[in-house]
Image (cartoon, rainbow, N blue to C red; front, side, top):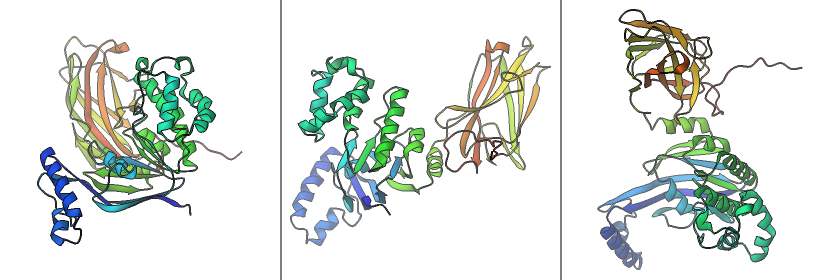
Length: 410
């Protein structure tokens, strides 16, 4: 067993919504701390779990441990307590209850732009930022070329930082911070800015660091969390809502926090969606409904459309989106795209059978799209028309679709 580098035991942290009361509570807490044997003092400070007026728990009873070589993905909606927990782990604030044990050198990739001087050049900021992170002058000189190479900013090092774009600043900040050789690495949303190639480069660097340290990784990009995390914790309202090694299940629990929105119909209105029915076996749902299926099930969709008299030909397609609004599966009609049909009379009823649906474990939202041939016009696009929740599938992959291959041993 590898050694435990991060150990959190029943961490709780409270804040106050009122600035005036917060200042008053701070003064009284300091005064009462001078008499820690006073039972009434401890009760007034909330050490037995009481909250005073305007106070709330930002974190409550959080426990976990991270070993060397492990990465804990920390997820949750805004305000769930992720940043508060990172600040406690980084020693910036103290918990009101519980204990944190950190073993070894701690590196934090949180505010990469903190400490940068906009007047200084990129080269000068490398030296000043590295010094702030604890590098000696000899260490900075030894790592300078690696930092420049990683940042991809060699041609801009003599330019003042105030002329850098936000993406360039992140590149420079990550290039410096990534040269740390910590035992514990805390990462908070540092990859939100930057081009795609640099993000992959950063994720590969994090994977390399994982071999010799423990990592806590906070991100709203579930793809990034899936890629680097060995464990996952979801916070909800300051409490632990999910914790374990089943990263895919943790991401699905996170997705369940969001409904995905309501039905949205756009287009020029020449074709109108009048009814929709989806079923698999005995399970059925209507427009804006939800259907629970298993990976590989057969799903049938029946759509009732009403077209204006001048519409003689149209194309329909069904598109499935994941929770990051990335299209993952399109149901076509055998042509290059969609299914061509000819509206007849007041209403046209279309039915499609989606056999052996390859969607992976998770929740998906469907769009029914009706266009003119050649995609010249969009007659009707009904987003969030229904939702599929898929069970089984691949337990470890974060991809949208999983299909069986014809494997053979040669």
